[in-house]
Length: 121
Image (tube, rainbow, N blue to C red):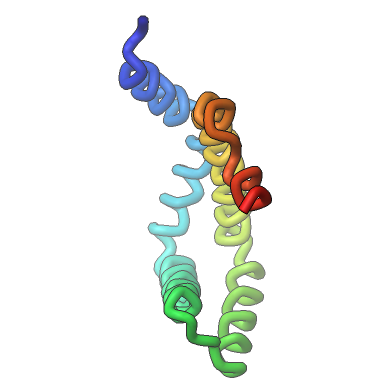
C-alpha cells in the first residue's frame, strides 16, 4: 500500500504547480507590492475578522459595523487587482473544498456524511 503522506505531499506539490495557485500567488504579490492596495485589503480583512469573532462569541454586529464592512467591501471590489485576487481566492477555496470532499469520501461511506447524521438526530 502506498504511503498516504507521500500522496498528500504529491498533491501539495501539484497544487503549488497549478495555474490557479500560480495566478493566486502572482496577484497576492501584486497586492503586497502596492502600498495602497495592501492597506485597503488589510483593513477590510481586519474588519471582517472582527465581525466573525463577534459572531462566534454570540454577539450581533452593530448597524454601524455592518455598514462599515459593506462600504469597505464595495471599496476593495472597485480596486481591480484586489477584486481579481478575491475572485481567485474563491476559486482556490472551491478547489480545496472539492479536494477535501474527495479525501473524506471513504469516511463518509463508512460513517455517513455530517448532513446524514444531523438529519438522523
